[in-house]
Amino acid sequence: MSKKKYNFGAGPCILPDSVLNSASDAVKDYNRTGLSILEISHRSSEFEKIINECEDLVRELLKVPADYSILFLQGGASTQFSMVPMCLMQPHKGAVYLDTGYFSLKAIKEARMFGPVQVVASSKDRDYDYIPVGYHIPRGSAYFHCTSNNSIEGTEIFDFPETDVPIVCDMSSDIFSREINVADFGLIYAGAQKNMGPAGLTLVIVKKALLKGIQNLIPSMSDYRIYNDHNSMFNTPPLFSIYVAMLNLRRLKEMGGIKQAEETNIAKAKLLYDAIDSSECFYGLADKADRSRMNITFKMYNREREPEFLNFAESRGVVGIGGFGSVGGFRASLYNAMDMLGVEFLVQCMSDFIHKDLFKNFKLKQI
Image (cartoon, rainbow, N blue to C red; front, side):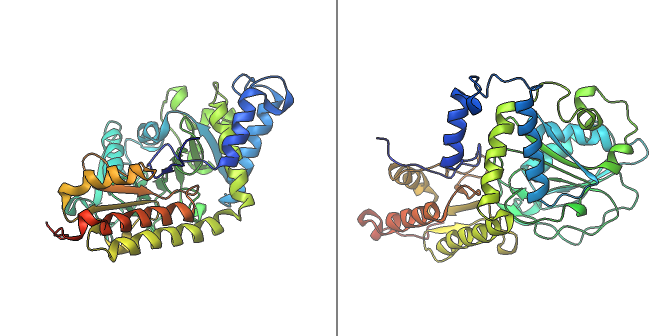
């Protein structure tokens, strides 16, 4: 029997055992149809029920207003970096972007291929360890783009700007982890592989008025209107990813919905941040006011011992905590499916490493 693993990887996300078990059964025989979920037609009544339930769950859990469309697309959030400006930018209306790290920079780069882009604020001056505030969003802009949670840098936006300009938000790594007011946004997009389901599915929630305002000549596969008109089935959608997302959202509803998930996520993050802040060995990277609840980034005062801690943690069954290449250090991702026991285990692992005999007489704060 394999040793239990605590997976703190940034993505693809961990999934609850009940979801994995149901998905496993469906791969062999979906709902006693004699067919695998991997084989059923996207035009079948069976899949129509799946995609409709998935949409209903998204709408219910996020309290999506009736004047918004819910689309299930492919290509990951990275495809949205070009799809958003392709659809929403206009020759006489440039777009406004907030630069908070790696993924916002990728979005900015893509958007500049389709029209003028103004970066209204950036936290690059401090290696993206905070969220800028006090910036001005020019009226008449096509849209304002931001990334709600920066999974590499470990920061998260908790207060979105008030503006008449449509807000477009990449919520890939914190959607379904906290309550939001969808009506504050013109368009929300999210890769599913953090809190929703397996990789291969991208969720888009878009105000119908924005769709009506699209004037550009766009290839069909990049046109939100096409997917809206075809119930996300203009071509073959990622059936299995949608099915697993449906199972996961069904479980989220059963567990008390997003309000309960947010309370748990706050408690998990506090437990780990408290352990980091009280430690003479580890320190956090992000400003306290902007610390992500989903992706906790930290390093050791003695950077030379970081590989040793990674090996120590892995020997205990803690995996996926290595920091992103350009940042280094550690990153523990506390997505919805990571329970409190897992976080407690990581904290205990950190404590055990600090207090083991080899470490007792070592100078901790060596910078």
